[in-house]
Length: 417
Ligand code: CAA
Image (cartoon, rainbow, N blue to C red; front, side):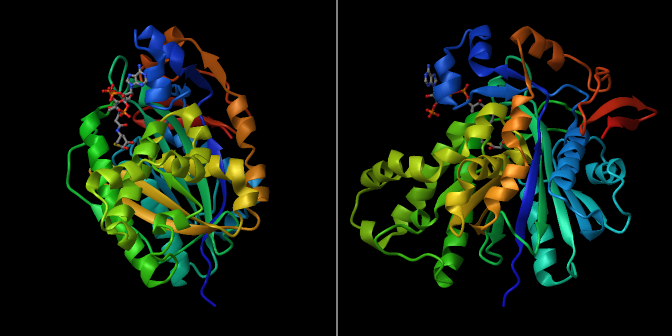
């Protein structure tokens, strides 16, 4: 029998503070409906300098190990997907290994390609296990980022921060991956980038949306070709994408998932034998189906709407939201996942939700983690944004949390755990 590989469990870490998005809109003199209805946001995480990508990654990985009863001696690979690492050479992953006192006998590295880095790590880990090279060991893949554009920029309402830690193994209780079906697409573009030394990202906002949609089309068509060849989906009364119970997207802001879903459907409608006689306008109208979006996408977005963008972790926050909402009823069903990283690379893959998914996600206590946060005013958010990245506030970490304490002689010291 073919080896099963995939995500066994997950855990999340989010900044302790958030701002209400309608309040931010009012402070900027913008109609709140632009941020709530236009972008699909509700709340936005406000990381302080003590909550850097290392601290958030270590907190998420520590929770994964504690809550899910992981035996650290089983872990042979620790990968951190991030585009907001803290050093050009020393990876976030080695900090996490040290802070959690994990065994030395593991491979550690960071994976960077904008928001795609976490998926690159997940694929490296799952294919390592599927190949047999892991020899029964598991991997931890942590997606950790601070999404930061700066005050009074168009990207401001799409900031955020956090981390999602994934346990990847031969016991995929959450999601068994369809190894070998993935489709990928790379295009060399300048849609979003962050030159070395800059804290804030640079972005060509509207162009970045079109790059995302272009790369999505290439990746999805690649997956569809293989999924059709393996008879995982077929042309028939329904479109191939409609044969996936749910579809998760990279979510820089929630409305992007709606645009992405329309594009995905358009890819099918353009190729479907049944719609060959339709006009382009008719296909575009059919692609926009609200019923399809409501049935296949909407239920995954509740956590993203409360955190904002988390770059590498955004797709995996959508997985967290979906599992929190519907794990039990999705058991045994196939879902699709679309990862996008600016620059750009996109990957579409699929997997089958496991029978134990509901028990696994319950242990992650997602609602509890979100409920512990504190709402801050826009003035307090601005104060935190203006703090220097090398001068963290000396706040006491909550039990199980890590924080950056200080940077001395270019060495970072953390407290907590
Ligand atoms: N009521 C309701 N809706 C309103 C409204 C109102 N009063 N005013 C505007 N809107 C709607 C607009 O119609 C628009 O919706 P549609 O796109 O569906 O038409 C939406 O609100 C946003 O309005 P604008 O496009 O005018 O907003 P903007 O020019 O300020 O820019 C943005 C929006 C480009 C997303 C900007 O926030 C940005 O640059 N964000 C960062 C970049 C980003 O997230 N890119 C996504 C793709 S790249 C990627 O995915 C990688 C990554 O993580 C960064």
